[in-house]
Amino acid sequence: MIVRVIALLLWLPMQAAAQGFAGLGTDAEGFAVPTPDPAFDFPQDHGPHPEYRIEWWYLTANLTGPDGTAYGVQWTLFRSALAPETREGWSDPQVWFAHAAVTTPDRHLVAERIARGGIGQAGVTVDPFDAWIDDWRMAGPSFDDLTLTARGNAFAYDLDLQATGPLVFHGENGFSVKSAQGQASYYYSQPFYEVTGSLTLPQGDVPVTGAAWLDREWSSQPLAETQSGWDWFSLSLESGDKLMGFLLREDDGGAFTSATWIASDGTTTAYPDGAFAAQPLDWHEVAGRDVPTRWAVQLPDKGIDVTVQALNPDAWMALSIPYWEGPVTVEGSHEGRGYLEMTGYE
Image (cartoon, rainbow, N blue to C red; front, top):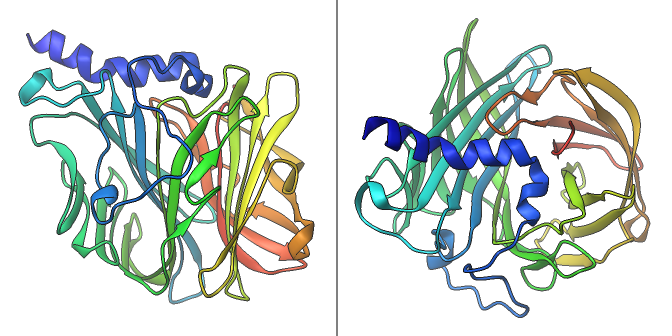
């Protein structure tokens, strides 16, 4: 029985790792799929949607210590379904896993947790909001007022998050198209968190302040079969405006793009395929892979022409599903900070 349980816990992450992120383009038969004109229901939609195959609560934060040192923090809870239902106990087909990281200019510290649904080890409730896996937690009286905790072998963090702006919705009112063939997700963000708290690092505790961005997304087939990975940018500019943009790489060398301009007051402008551009400028070898860690990013309609540079080019997430994730700086037509995620680099 123990061997069977361990195999079930590990099956989904190992399958995803073997397929690469192109596995997210496999058939969604039996699962719900996103459709246009979503009608979101809050706070209920802050919680899980087990009828969809993949979902995440994805927070990144750009932080600063007392001496001006820049830090990055990631906290991500993933839900993946083996079947579109929930059950009590070990037979529940929902698999949960989570990633946490702290990035400094010269270190990248990561940890991972894996859990089975149905036994209380991981989950999300909405009133009050509580997302957890083991002793990692993002919880508070509401989605706008949260405490975030996680720990690994060489790090921990304890952060308070206070939202100062509204939720924003990507694509067509939260229906985010991912390919020319029409694959899509439901996608909204809270990009306006102010952060205070502390990091526990090998050299000791560090008080930090800064800003965080939380992405909520769910789907059953977010990629097309011809797409192998993505490059995703969340950029917070000194003007108070923000930019989310991604390109989904095609096997033939092309890419599908999408972007959302978020004004400082929370109003948004959605941009279709082709309006947003990102080109690698420099590549860096990490974990035996060449990964682009310096980019030219443009959104001509808003006068954006910037260079996005990794704070630490070695921010590789060496976990059961490997990818690159880390804080970045923004220079050029606009100044700022943000986060970059890159998947599917073999």
